[in-house]
Length: 459
Image: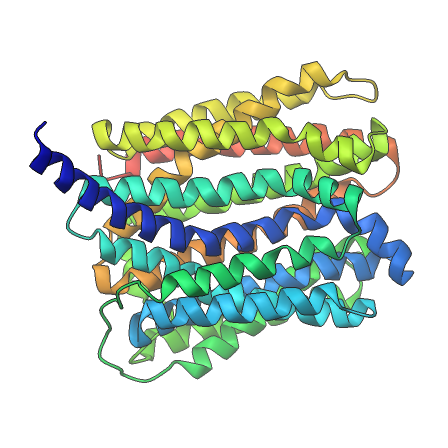
C-alpha cells in the first residue's frame, strides 16, 4: 500500500469511528440503566424505606416510558431529522439522570425514571437512523457499524451489574445515576459535527395513534407487573388486560386510516420483517427475565454480596464483546442468516446449561451458560438489526428502528414481570424460577431456528 492509499484508508476510517462512537454513547447510557439498577435496589429500599411494589415501579417506570414513546420518536426522527432528536434525547436523559441522583423519595425517583425513558425513546431510534443513513450505500460498512453499535449496548447491559456493584462499593446508589451525566454531555458535544439526516415531507403527527398505543402498552405491562401482587381474579388486573386489548384494536384501526401513522402497517407485509421482530421479542424477553432472576439467585440463594454478584456477571460482558465482533465478520462474509442461526444455536445451549442451577451450585458450573448466553445474543442481534433496516427505505429507518426497539423493550419488561413473579417466595422459589425460565427460554429460542430457516428471505 502506497502513501496515497494509506491516507485514503485513514480518511475513511476516521469518520466511521467518529459516527459509530458518537451514536453508541446514547445506546450505552440507555442500556446501562436497564441493568445497573438491580444491584442497587436493596440500598434504595433502605434509603427510602420503600416496599417491594415501589421498587418494582422504580425499575419499570423507565422501561414503560421507553417502550411506549419510541414509536413516536422514530417517526419524529424521520420527519424532523435524526440529529436534532438525538441531541434532544441526550439532553433529557442527562437532566433526568441528575434528577434521579438527587431524588428525595420513591415517587420523585419514579418520576425522573419516566423522564429518563422519554430521553431514551428519543435518542435510540435516532442514533440507529443516523448510522443507517450515514452508511446507506455501503452495505459492509453499515453491517460493521450496526455490529459495533449493538456491541456497545450489549456490553453496557452485561456490565451494568458489575459497574453498579463497584460504584456502590466506593459510594452509594446515587452514583449509578450521576455517572450518566458526563457521558450525555460528551455525546451532545460530539454530535454537533454529525451531518443531519434526510427527512420525510411533514404530513403531520399521529396524536391519536400515539395516545392509544401508550394506553394499550402501559395497561398491559402494568397488569403483568402487578399480577403476582393482586392475582388474576382482581378486577384491576383483568380490567387492565381488557382495556389494553381494546386500546390495541383501536390503535390498529387508527394506524390503518392515518395519513402519517407512527406504525406503518405495510412494514408487516414482509415475512422477513415479521420474523425478525419476533426474534427481537424472544431474545429480549428471555434475556432480561433470566438476568433478573439470576441477580436474585446470586445474592439471595448463593449469598454473594452486591459487589461479588456484580463481578459474577463479568463473563456476560466478555461474551457480548467477543460475539459482536465475530458477528460483524460473519455478516460481511455470509450475510445475516448464518450469524442469526449460529447465535440461536449457541443461546439455546447456554440456557440449557442453566438447568443445573440449584441451592449449592459452584460458580464454575455457571460460567459456561454465563458466557454462551450473551455470545448467542451477540451473534444474532447485530444481524437481526441489520436485517430489519434492509427491509425498509432509508428514510424510514428511524421508524423501523423504533418498532424493533419498542417491541424488544416491551418484551424485556414482560420477561422481568413473568420470570420475576415465579421467583416470589423464598430461595426455593428463586431456584425453581431459574430452572423454569431457562427451560422456557431454551425452547422458545430453539423454535425460532425453524422459523428463520423458512421465512428469512435475506441472505
